Image (cartoon, rainbow, N blue to C red; front, side, top):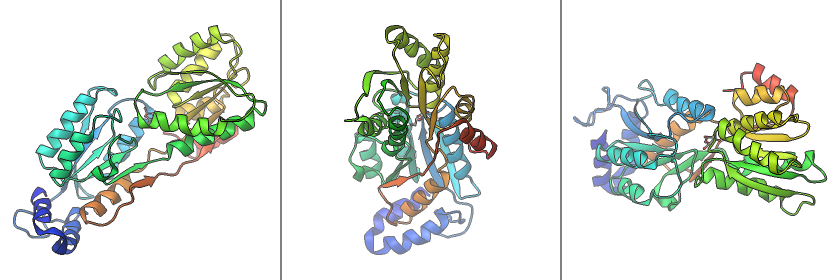
Length: 335
Ligand code: AHR
C-alpha cells in the first residue's frame, strides 16, 4: 500500500481525487495490488496503532473495539503497538517512528501524554502518512493530524457537574480524583466539571490529586483526605476505577458511600454500574469506548482524500440511580 501513497504524493491534486478514490476502493477492503498497479488482489491497508495498552476496563474495551474494526476482512493489516506502560511516552514515540519508517498507510494514536508529539507528527506529515487521534488529544497544531475521535470530555464532565449541583442544592465540600497528569482528558474533565460548579453557592473544593486512573491509588488518596477532612461530602472521580477505590476508602472509614459521601465517576464499565446498582457510587457518566467503526470511516475517508471533520464526537449516556444501573447491566451496556 505504501506505493499507493507515494503515487498519491507524486500525482498532486489534479489526479489525486480520482486516484485516491480508486485507491480508496482498494483501501476500503478491495483487493488492490499496488505493486502491479492493479486493483483487485489481496492488498491490505496497513494501520499502525500507537496504543496505550493494558490500563483498565475502559482502555481494554476501546482497544478491543479498534482491533475488532480493523480486521483483514475489512481490508486492514492492523499493527498494534501498546506502550511499555500507560505513562511511557518514549515507547510510543519509538513505535510511531517505526511506523513512519515502515511507511504504513495510516497511524492511529492514543497518546500517553499530550505534549511532545510535534516532531513525530511533522515526520508523518512529511511522509504523507495521515494520523488519526483516538480518545486523547495532543498539544500540537490540528493541521498535523486528520481528526480526533473521542467522546466530548468537557461535556461528559459537565453532566457530572449538573448531577452534582442537582444532588447538592446547598453546595458541597468536594474533592477531585484526577487521571494521569498531563493528559488532555484530565484537563478537559476538570474544565467541564468546574464550569458547572463555578459561581454556585456552597461549593468548596477541598482539593484535587491524581490517583493515576487506579482503584488502589484512589483508595489511598481518599483515606488521607477523609482523615484530614471529615466533612467531605462529594468526590468527582475522573474514571471508574478511582471512584471504586474511593468508595472502599469511605467504607473503611466507617462511613456509607452514597449516603455520607457521594461519588460520581466517568467511563461506564460494568464494575462501576454494579457499584452504582449497589449504592456505592451515585452517578456514572459513560465515556463511550465503542468507536471502531467511526475510526474505520475516518481512515477510509482520509485515504480517499475526502474531507474529515477535525473532531468526531462519540455520543454516550449517563446513569443516575441503582435502577438505571441495573437496567444498563441487563441491557449489556457495560463493558
Ligand atoms: O483517556 C480515557 C481515560 O483513560 C479513561 O476515562 C480512563 O479509564 C482511561 O485510563
